[in-house]
Amino acid sequence: MGYLIGFSLLSIFFFTLFIVISRLLYKRRMNIKYSLRNMFPFETLYKTQFNEGVYSHIFLWLSLLAMVSFFITFDMSFNDTTTILIMVGGILSALIIGALFYTPLMRLKTHVILASLLFSSLFFETAMILISAWRSNQENMTWQTITGIIFSGFLLLVIFALAMNPRLTLKLKAVEVKKEDGTIEYQRPKGIALAFSEWVLIIVYLVSILDIVLYKLVVNG
Image (tube, rainbow, N blue to C red; front, top):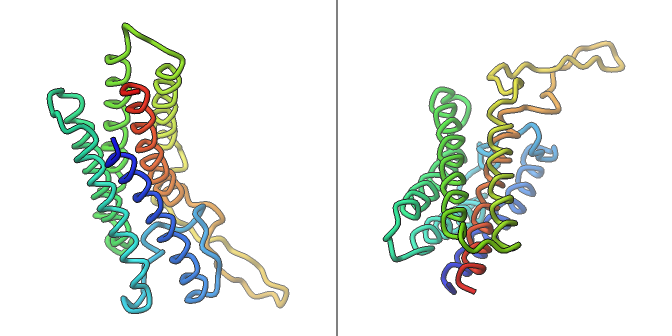
């Protein structure tokens, strides 16, 4: 259980460091503030010299390594099919998240495939967590386990709502802004559904790790 808590905290800690440093570097490089609402994950590293953003790369890799290690070690018995499927879904989601940070929209087809796979793998992983919690506690339900089941169900609804969003398209049209001197300037829209959805999915993934930890603490406690 100690490894489980350790890897979960390390994954969140390193990812937080990655986000903080990357946003600071982005603002210095592009002279604008990075926004999760209309900027893609890959833009945190896009057109960044490796020596300039070396800490961003390192913290991202360490976070991904901690995520994969978490799902490898969260249940070493491997005696349950659902547990194995959670492990596979969690590792696959971590690898896809890593790939999204290095796949710009210039590779549009690859980027869309990765985003679609993240939707699918994360939905699958969260569904397996919910099924595992329900099956393990159907004869001995407590308020803690009921809360965990509701929490997992909420994460599933978030993923489903993102996938059903009618604004989730590839039509990334710039917004015309008329300046004081009469000239027209084209700006990025304030919200891009695909970019925001990718960030929400990453957050859901990190929250699902905490969900597993809380569930394990209740079951083992």
